[in-house]
Length: 322
Image 1 (cartoon, rainbow, N blue to C red):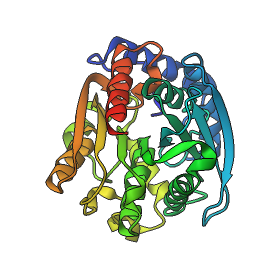
Image 2: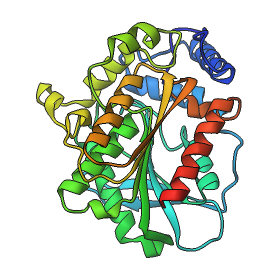
Image 3: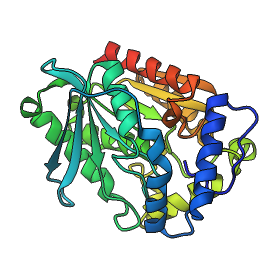
Image 4: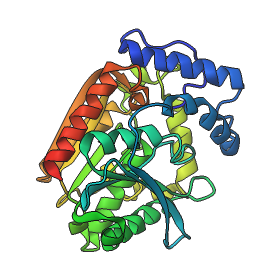
């Protein structure tokens, strides 16, 4: 996700992903800043480093922003509409960044890619970041956005019966937890599909994943992931809360889910565990492991064949389920 400590990359990576890690690492080195336990500084640097990867890609018919009321203040959403077709399906997308950083802008191209490829509206959520807003603030904001989008679908010119929810990394965590919250409130019918890209679903990391992919030659280190959890959770009691740590949750009665799983990620095993538990709970799932991919690899779509394939696969699945 950050790659602030190395300008190298793992030798087993897809060539495009390897270049992505090298280039972002060099950019972070140029700015001379990593997390440094300073969230504001990390956000400013991350926006600069990620900006080149947002350029290019699909052109939208329209991009419109709205304000959505939530229990924790109004939240900005950004609606990407790829064409003039009315009443189309939509996916609410929750960006990653360890709950601490990144934005609608860093994920602009990711959302445009899904909109164009799947022929849907994509709605980005500008949720509140940690540590200023810890669990459950962002989660409750995402839940409120799902309710609002479904209930105001006519004014947004989307089909309320064909609505997906998805995200990457921390955004995948928030998406799954929001789906669980809606289900438990009797509002699960609002969602038809879920998309999880390299999600952070549990606090404990696989020792094998840490040994292979948890160091500075890959995009997300084990140390960074531990830091993000400390910034997101309010206290030790949250470590056992299934809405904060959804691998602990009862996963029954959820919509079909697509899991985009990079082979070379410190979080790989978490996605595979989630896939198995969803299946055991009777949920339709499709988990695809992308060889040579690592955390955040979708951002490298301009230079990576494996990112191109992941977007195409997920978009085809969305067309089938929406």
